[in-house]
Length: 366
Image (cartoon, rainbow, N blue to C red):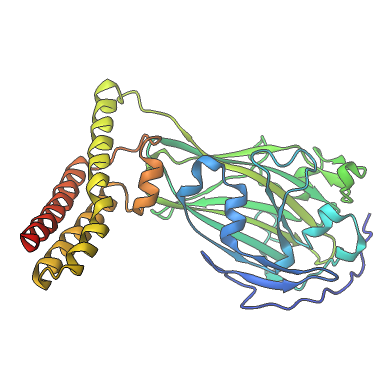
């Protein structure tokens, strides 16, 4: 049933570019009859990341039209699956999935066109929306996975698609979301498993597929960055739309059989030395201020600051270049083995900085 011929144009005021917003980038737009809404690819990635792995987000970018992507909290069709939010990525207006109103049934949103862009059939692709999420793979991670469900008003041969894959740092690309037979999901391949939505949860779309879980092996890339790509597009026309609900992006951590008691003991030692480092590090600012106030010479102050900064950078390098606030949060729960030698060096440098200031303050007060 090709029920949508022409939609209502949206009054959109955009700040910044619609395309390629990166980590921390935001878009502001005015919705019909509604307040200004601010969206960012970072927040959209965080909306589907399992809470245990939010610190592993490196960055995110979105290309498409603003209304094609939406952080949703309203429970529909089995979503959200983890936490209180999930993501809708659509070849039309993502709000239509929840709203059930023709107000958002815009069909051709004037989005990205890719000639021969349908990844299986080679049909021209219209209104292509793409979210790219870059993640650091935790130590001990074996798989990356997320759950998804396709909903659509289209039918064969209009093969709207959901194309998801992972890009690895060595140039390898692996398809993530597939049907049980290994096929990339698009309308013709989904047709045998589609069931009618029938207005369930107020969703006005015609068909929906099952909830599937996409899984990709990442065991060879622990400690490295990878990029998950989520892409939805129309095929064959630009009017009748398809959307995908996505949630619970996560890693599976499986300790290696070689990680026995010795490994755990070393990890405990690393954490204890890190804790010792923080006992000195947290005193530095106060001591430095006191030393400055009472007139400790600039050479001593400069040397103490140099030791402190070196210690901070060394500790960050030991824990995989995370900032120190993240190290504090992660160090007691992670199975990541930091570089113990660097931890001890950072501890010694920080201790030296503290001792230098303490001695200078004592001398100035005598």
